[in-house]
Amino acid sequence: MNAQGISARNLLRETFAAMGTLYAPLLIIYSPSLIFFVAFNSLGGLQNSTGVALYTIYSFVVIPFLSGAMIFYTYRSFARNQVTVGQAFNQASRRFLHLILVNILLALLVSAGFIALIIPGIYVSCRLIFSSYATVIDNSSALDSISSSWNLTKGHWWLVCRAIFLITFVVFVPTILISGLIGSILGNLLASQLVGQVLGLIAGVLINVYVILLYKALRKSAGTI
Image (cartoon, rainbow, N blue to C red; front, side, top):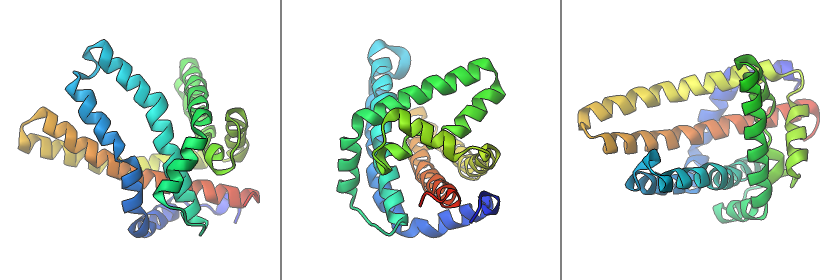
């Protein structure tokens, strides 16, 4: 397969076909985010310093860790080298500091791109989207992981951009509509936000699988797997 043969729509079909066996384990891996949501809102959200500190820790510590476990579990599952949820968490733990560092560097580089202008920001985001993948899959350093994503997406940033737009539109538009509908029925802001968080969790799992499939397709086209 070459990159020209990668179809964003075909990847979408593969994603839904694969969810039967992957959904439950991936939901377990990412479910701690719901605990954060409850704790975050009970502390008043971003309206006080405690909430801001908790959100910062969540963004730069918890999310990289959970994402690393999801990436490792999903990739190994598609590579027919199945691991358990516990093994996925163990791998994320071993690569914990590297995952934090690569996400901090990614945030700085993408922010610099958006400061320059919107288009450079989107371009950099697409080129570096796989930065944490090599960290947990190939045990690469943070800098090597960023370089790996940059090299892998060379000449293919528009394919990546189209693919991410497609999965975001397909997954998050229904999520927003359903969340808004349920929120209007419940008439309770916190309940509405909790429903939105649960739906976002489900959507996030789908996106994770989709992007892993895109990553594998690009690696195969580059001859790295």
